[in-house]
Length: 313
Length: 219
Image (cartoon, rainbow over all chains, first blue to last red; front, side):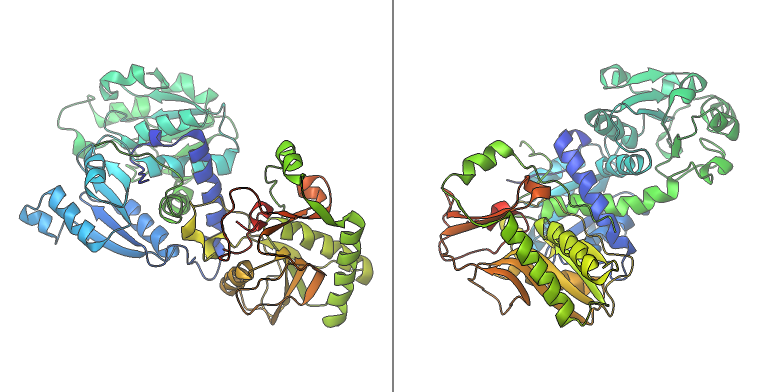
């Protein structure tokens, strides 16, 4: 059976916990002098990046290499895509090379789902348009669990540009699966139309939500995806929805501050907050490798994938 | 050194059912005596066990390593470092089954470099788990020597591996299963010998003992 990780909703609660437990064990490998396991020897993982990314691509590459997989990095610059090759033809090329796993980042929502119908290997969504970014949600949940323990009943507040954020969508789905209570905070213009169908609550008032939060996750203001005015000025946005030292002082003592990166310091998060001990931003990067190792191992390590979902044609 | 072995679903009802048709070849006192003897042999062979590190192979090997460490401490009057080793990622049959949950690898703070590592497991069968453990150890450091302590040696080796310390040699047929129960994992101590579980069709191609006792059957 061929299974993929395209949406955070592809993971049942048991799947998600298995990924987090596996990541916990694999995190130890980073502390060893030989940071390598032989598990995926002879398997090929293709990193297919149609959109700029530093941390996600490097994180997937490090994860696959620590598991001894052969890694082929494919970025659009310098490839035949810039000559007009279609996604399908690129997929067929990968197919001919015998990729066991394909990690895809694409600016079009749904591209990984299409790809899953064209290749024999497992597809892992590394971010598609404004749709989903499930491994980011896994590494976020992993980071929360390491800092706070079990996530059931925890209050997670996600603040900012939810409309353009695949990170927010994947986090809402995964955290709901894991039993956390998610509240989205954003200006009305930066919330998707169908947000009332998401398994979370919505607020427009950051200051009212902060004292009750165990986790505050700040989202990047994605100016590259904004071709209309979603808020009057950056300063006004920052004043109403930015996380500064005054707001952090109102958080509970144990509460943590997260950001998926890259940050706009001074817009959604103040520099002093980003560098404070509450901030998990650097941990999130390290945890990303462990979480992605877990996903690669569980999808590609055995006779058949242990997690994920089949894709209908 | 809190190499806690994770509980592995000791479903009592299922166990009781499976115990039917199994006969106990070792009971709790036999296991106790075997471990005491192994502890003394380790001390004798390693001249007091000054450099010894015990590493139990998940899951029941960890329990046995913890018990052996306690006995060594009783005799020599000083603590003996012990830890756990999960060999899942190094198994040669990884691709024959769906990916499995991982156990914990926990080394004592002293590490394994230049120590005499005694690997501890419950059943020695094909030798493939021990081979995986040797590979795992290779990535964790460079011990001065590696030895193997085993509660039950049931024969049918497929690799040139032998145990240095054996609790009991138990001649078995390929069609039989050996299950080790330990109080910490299974609520009682015993070694059970039984017929192959229904549906087992492994015949002459064993895929090796696994760290989980359920897989110690000839599947």
